Length: 62
Image (cartoon, rainbow, N blue to C red; front, top):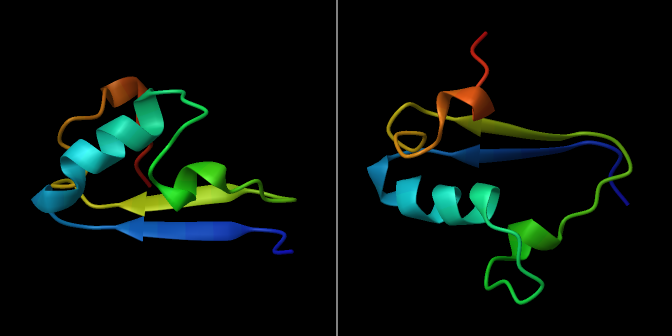
């Protein structure tokens, strides 16, 4: 099992999927990324286009 997992998403084509993945809780999910349970951190690297539909409170910039 991986201690830390990094997920990369880029492009406007991912914005609806990211919104669904990050803002809905469902036990019946079509996306495997929602079933990840890392021993350490789950870190998302998302560009501005992919993050367009996410609330600012969910985003951190560095």
